[in-house]
Length: 209
Length: 393
Image (cartoon, one colour):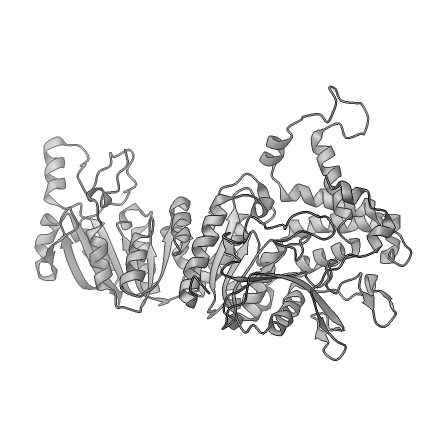
């Protein structure tokens, strides 16, 4: 059984949040844009010049048929083709943990965009820890709904792991929002030390130093 | 099939049908070709569909493929067959003639009314034949640009085409970026591959090996290299299909017989089909035109001027692109479309790219492919919105 972790609750609250972070009239690249929900949201509500990259050809074709500018591509291999600072924002929503080399993807995102917006499920969340502690089996939760053998999430990390990576990569965290399992805001910047335990998902706005 | 054509005598064929309307440029307005020759006079035969709106912003130029013509959505005057893109262009179709003004011109070098090797050379009073200058995709596009200008259109809303037509689309976007609001190159490439040049060379050699080709001078000697041209078409037609499509359509089925004939008749249905394709083709196409147009495709290489860096060719392009390929197309495989997309991405261009699952091979772009229709409709609607075209324009 495959469930998109964020979509099973009906609406992608995190997408609304991301859309709210984008300056109207800017250029946006959405990496892993799926069926183009965020692109549609952005072009309708923020008058944004937006493009998408999506790995599934079915998603791409559906997006283009809706009039969105989407190309088939893979975050791991195709970001190198994009020009430096070609976009105001590059968005990677709920996809980082499914890439083969998240550290290289992060480097490309902050190169291509003046800002990068990245969201991912937090493997440090107390539910994940408790699940593993009590059962001794790979956690299956609302934000991580897959069994270990079928999960596309091959590089899960905690918020602290990710913050650690940004420091190694000389990437500045401009903004951080912790989200609950529904994608609603639970904690913001100042509570980041607590977030690794309490946040089901994380949303970062980053820029290269 | 094509009974009417089969019954035509050769003198009937020479009573050339009218290919009006034709835009004519006189001796005083020569076109400078890539080979350095100045060509005059120049005639461009074209068809239009729909109506141009008041601010002339709803024009779509359709570029035809190697053996196509301007009859994109109307009956061909020679074959009597319906338009070659009737499923795409027409009222309520993806390229909606109730909304857009559609232009399609016979390419320069062609044989359906535009200036080409069958035209009269003003210097000799006879058909050009091989004295016609070798032309390029860029020359074709420059000729079309004259037509578009003569029609009073400053900017095309969209340029669209498949295969050789797709090459023209890319050339348009490259040569006239400000005149191309959006572009849809389908089943094409930014340069012609070695394999494709090889196939074209087979076709050309088949034509030139026919004694009736008369070193290109067959028209003045009242002959036609029909056998050579038919073989060229047969070889090329295989490249337009796919192994799966041929298997599904014919398998090893025999033609009107129970057993193989132990001879060289068309035992197999696939042989009979190819022979039919070859013989039908010679009724509507000129052998020298085939040489010139295949040559133009062979010479096509948009990246060559930029040290093979295609992205440089599109730097800063204002055009919105929608690139389309088909999974089973081995003549212009998806990898070649992907090269175009990568180059456009590197220019931060506005680009969509759709690969459509199809067993029909290269010819899929001419056939009934609902996903192609959905792609074109979606892309054109979004582009029309950006261009500010209203639905009642």
